[in-house]
Amino acid sequence: IIQAARNNPRGFGTIPERDVVTANFPIVGFERLKFVDEKLVLESTVELLIRHDLCFREMGELIFPSQISVMRPKHDNGQPHAEVTYEFSGAIEAIYASLVVRLNHTDYFRRQEQWRYAAEFSRNGGRLGFAMQQAVEEGTGELGIFFYPGVNEFDRVTFIRFVTDHLRTKGIDIREHIHLYCPNCKEEVTNLRAIEARVQAGKLDIACQYCDTPVIIPRSIEERYQSDPAFIQKQQELTRQTEQRTKQEVVAFKENQQAYTADEDDLLH
Image (tube, rainbow, N blue to C red; front, top):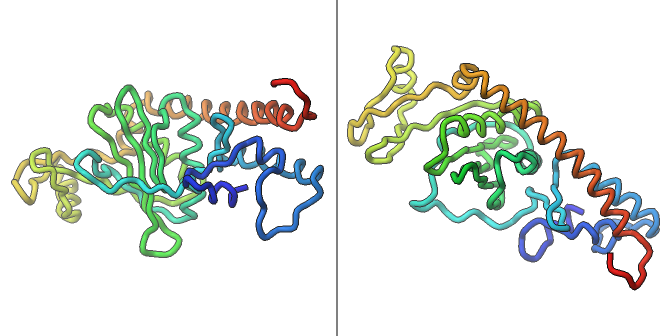
């Protein structure tokens, strides 16, 4: 099934749900079962893929985020820099797929666009998203979270915490790195040792190395999250939403599957 989604000629990583359930797609490199047995296996497999957040259903299609081959446009003046990045170890395809699926299952963040290892969502008219890339060291990756102007701090922290909670649920160790950008010249403050020294000294800002403008040093995301119980309540609410949505998707799939596999006749269904 994943192989067929990967071979989508438009690079969108999709395959019609009906084609999967009725075994109407090519299977390369495997000996096929008898038709009646194959349909049973495929139906069970789709249910497992949905339950494990590897694909989601939309307008009659099974969408596999990890199989999208369309690349995100290169950075231009309209795209923001990552404000916080996380180094992690694990399979980037599975992590990316399950994260997109779970975010897609919330009513809080609405999926807008997605590419290979990158996705953007909307919240109250603002846009935010993340991008992943393989790190130099084998088996490790980097996830960067970015925000367009207009996203408030509550939604920023909520989005970041949703992502990090997801990684921790998968048993993945992560290391946080917050990026500082000068409000005047927009350059990044890259001297990490100097930033750490300022924090240790109790200072709240650091001078930009390009124009000397004071740049505020934010608290870590974890500190901001723990300081306000509203953040914790929102995460619990989003977790319940995603779990409920997954159950609903399985039920809806089974209902559609019965229609897909009904005996053919001359009636419209």
